[in-house]
Every structure is written in structure tokens, then in C-alpha cells.
Amino acid sequence: MKKALLALLLNFMFYNIGFADSYYFKKCILNEIISADYLIYLDKKIIKVTLRTTGGDIQKFEDKIELIKKDQIVTEKIKSGKSQDSYFIYYLDTKTDSVIKQNYKYKKISGIDFVKPDGPKEQSYCADVKGDWDKVKKEEAEKIQVELKTEKEKEKKKREKQLKRKAQEKKEEEENKYDISIVGKNWIKLSNYKNTSGKQLKIDFDKKASEICALNGKENFNILEKKVEIIEMDKTPAFGLEATIKLGVKGTVECK
Image 1 (cartoon, helix red, strand yellow):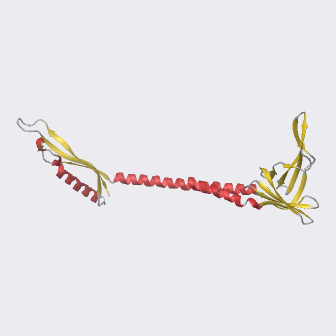
Image 2 (cartoon, one colour):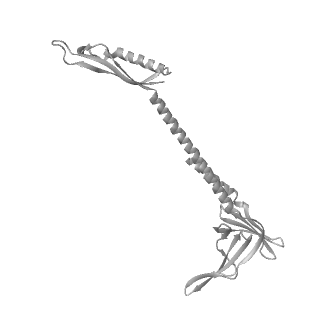
Image 3 (tube, one colour):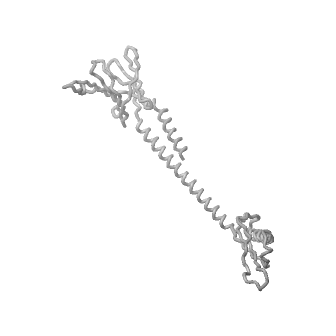
């Protein structure tokens, strides 16, 4: 899930980078002599500006982006050539397909710097504009949300399938388990009891397991537990006689 999420986020990043230079304000008439093209690079937060004169002169430079709004790109403060205390910013406005410039001026009053607009806003209209960065970002965000939701649903179904399979396997495993208990027929003297005394019982246990599994359509079995133990003891034998015991075997098998 984490890998899928990372892949989606990387796709989103590359998508934005790939389309950064497709936003622009071109053929903007600044005055009777100068026109301008503004190419917007959102990934680098810069605007590449090309100024052209009617005489054929060209000047190129870059301005830094301060703020990206829904329908505006706002530049950082740019030093003005009017005076040392002057600067300007400009807006690329998609509502009006225009470039709006506002000059500002610092003024010191009682030792405190004040900033105020220096003159009215200057608006220049552009003939060719592509500024749907907000729409593209929303569409891509919605696309990612859908993809994430789909991925989560797939992951959920996968987990549910795994849990269901495990539950089914556990159920089948429990259904294929059988407890077997066999009690020996003969009594043996306690002094004759050895670890090998239950050998026949073990053989009988395996035979019984094979029969049970065959009846349930299984050819083989695993012995989960098999233990020979004393089932009964005659603690009060007749005078002069030795105590006797009866053995049995108990255990569990899983048919396969």
C-alpha cells in the first residue's frame, strides 16, 4: 500500500513538472512599442519574461514568484529603476487575461518605514493566455483521490480474501483432525511394564488412524500426538500377588 501511495505521489509530482511550462501569458501589449511574453514555471517558481520592441530588439530575464493563487500569479518585489526607495510587483491575472503592475514606494516617517502604492495600477492585456493551473491541479488531485480509493479497496479485498482463506484452511484443518483412544485388552504385571510394552498399541493406533482417514476420503495422515499411558491399575491384588496394570494409547491425527 505504501509503495502504491508513493508511486501515485511521484506521478503527481512529475505531472506538475511536465506541465509547468505550458502556462503562459503571451502577446501582452505593455505600450505602443513593447510587447511581452511570460512563461510560467510553477515547479521552479519563476517567470521567464521576453520583451520585444517594434524595432526588433529582444530582452530576456526571470522574475521570482511570490504567490500562486487560484486565478493569479504574484511576483516577488522587483527593484524599480525610478529611485532607490521604489519597487514594483506584477500579477498575471487569468480573470482578465492581463498583466497588472503596481508600483510601490518606501517612505520614512518618524524613523519608521512605510510602504504605499506609487500611482495607479497599470494593466496590459494579453492575446494568448493559458492559465488553468488551478483546474489541472484539482483534476489531478481528484484523480489521485480516486486512484487511492481504488487502491485501498483492492487492498481491503485482498486482506478479506486472505483472512477468508486462512479461516477456511483452519476450519478444514480442524475438520480433518480426529482423536483416537485405544485401551489394551490384557492386564500386565507392573514389574513387566517397560517403554516397549505399548508397541502393539502404537501399531493399532496407526491402523485406526488409517481406517478413519480412508473413510473420509483421505489417503494419508499426520500424527499430531500419540502417547501410551497407564489407563487402569489393580491396587488391591490378592494376597501374595503383584499389582497389575492395563495400558492404552491416546492421541490426535490430521488426515491429508
